[in-house]
Image 1: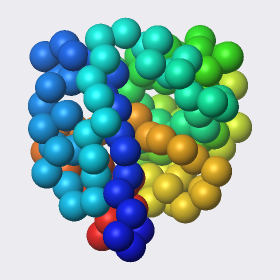
Image 2: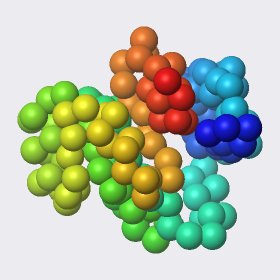
Image 3: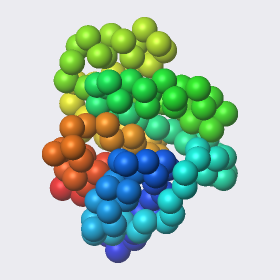
Image 4: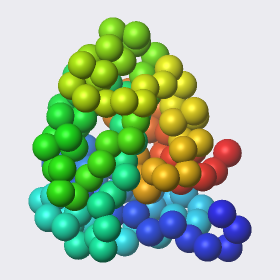
Length: 134
């Protein structure tokens, strides 16, 4: 990433939104651009956001379904999970690209952003790798 910083917005300020914001705020070369309670922030992008989803447990499936409903604002390019059952679920609801390793998902240069829905102890590593670090 060099000297450029990545601008990130956290959407959703429930009990998990603020911890996510605090994780992003300490990563090198990441600027926390804003916080927003509603998904209307996505409508402010000039183009459709190409998205990846990492983690398809209970909460990850909810995030995936919500992203798929935002057809005007978001295009889900792929998902990653270690569970073959979870990946079959994603394919069944229309996701074409599935990965058992999220680092393979992150190699897709068309992805603009990722939803990180990993267990809490993996959030920092996932956020850092998702922002181009490590």
